[in-house]
Length: 520
Image (cartoon, rainbow, N blue to C red; front, side, top):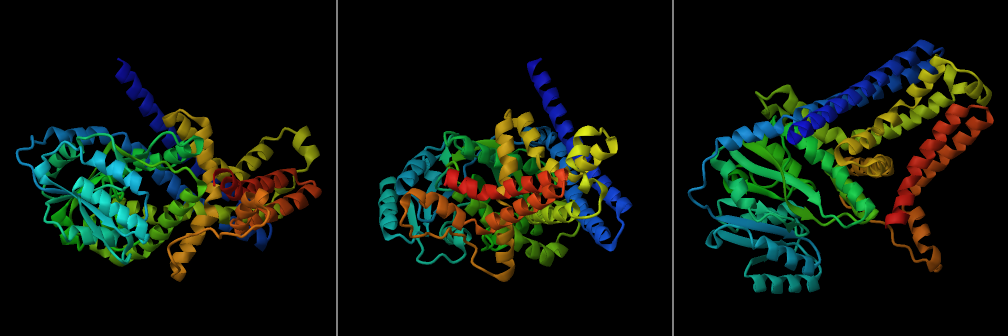
């Protein structure tokens, strides 16, 4: 009875999510129509056209997100049917467990490697390999000692050609194992049946890889737990929905891969996000993939804002690379359903949508505030003394995009039982908007895929953190300052709605500096 009630509650949550996304999409388009209706000059017509284009983009992503959320609720049944057809393991193939490393804490590697070696599997069929790209000689020497202590193979490269993909390709080329299991060095195994549980799925000879759910350890505090939820939406809802289309993403670790598939594909594509490219190549080469929504290992929590920025920079840099890669090769996806193409389009443009479109909406909002659109000039007296439905609807439409980004707040409450962490996820989208946009630009102009804060020599150590934060978020601070200045101008013209709106944007974009100062 309890399970049935839980299932109904979960189903209701999914349907509310679909309704929310759909309503937001319709509201955005509806407000676009309103802007055309009140346009009385070429300037306001331009604003209406621009707002409509961005609303259509936002509407597309919102509607497709609702498709993901809806389809994901059926994935457990789909996976159960697959498992029901599997036979018990009769033979145990050789498996190589590869741990790629780049200048990581040797003590952490030691502990996590020891846990990996406790996996339930015939020991004579297991091989452990450290694929080390470290440039710190002290770390390299310590990792060599750890490898000898555990009796694992240590492979060191003196260059980082191909980054993580290059390290994996180098390690894979040195083993004849039939399967390759990949774990990041910060991931701690918590379920020793990882191999025994995943191996049966490979009875289907067309399966190239099986990916499991990735989550962070607890104990990192409020910020870390919010970031965990930030990523959990992908693994809880998007991965299962995409698995129906054979587009579930190999997430770089906590996965088991068929060696012959790697060879057939030509190795891991040597890009910043090799996992996404490998997934796509697997699909191109007619292999199947599978996603198992179970956590077998927990990664080190993201404790600082700097860690999150570097992660998001890498993701958006790689996703922007993927866009052109996909366009060049999508002709090889013959026979695939339209949903397959949409999955890849959304993956490539997803973070760009959350960043570039967000910033463009902000700029258009400035244009609307200082236009002749009727509600953009509602004064304080009118706002507090008249009760006009049209006025209320107009203001609601004006704030529509920010409201759409508040969706994570509602979803986090539904699925993760927290309002506060959901609001943090909402704020992080604004705090990371320029970071993601810069990453996309860096990809286009061919700059280095890494991001590093500038280290300043500051005499006044008492203000070092504040100055450091402000200096490294110059773009966001400048943009927020412009928003505050424009908000002041709007308020001096008795434009209450516009003034509050632009001041709110100023607060949101200044959060990059606030989070860097607060969380490091």
